Image 1: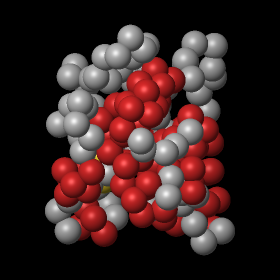
Image 2: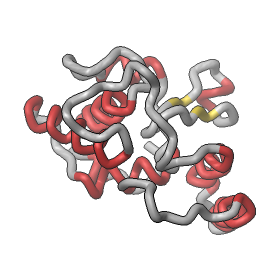
Image 3: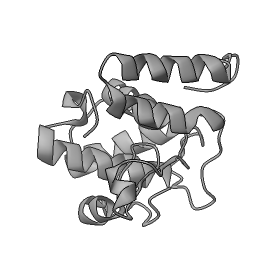
Image 4: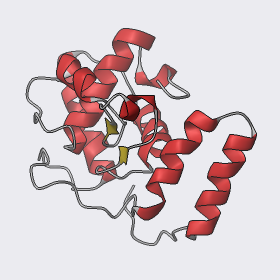
Length: 161
């Protein structure tokens, strides 16, 4: 969704929301939210190497470009499923990185819009997309391919995967 006209929540509200999630036993979900508090989710520009497929260089455009590639490659998923998971994992920040979970402790932090680790990105990379894990379209498309293999579709993912 374009960022124009949207109001950002104050940092304290985002942290409070994340801490509320921890209090309900969803600590895994809170970690990406806490990490994304310093990022401007919808207004962050993509890395310079971002895929360009006649879509705007924002979250809406990245999702639509990914869906076009997914349709060509037979990878299931919907806009709503991708958007829901992106917002949970990175708040829409293509440069998000998780430096505090078990993957990070093992030296392979989760990165990008859908918080993919390097080995998963390499294994599920979709030809025709960039090899840069921070490229929004490549990140979304690889994560959706992984989710399709493991869960049937990104639409079936409702928590950390």
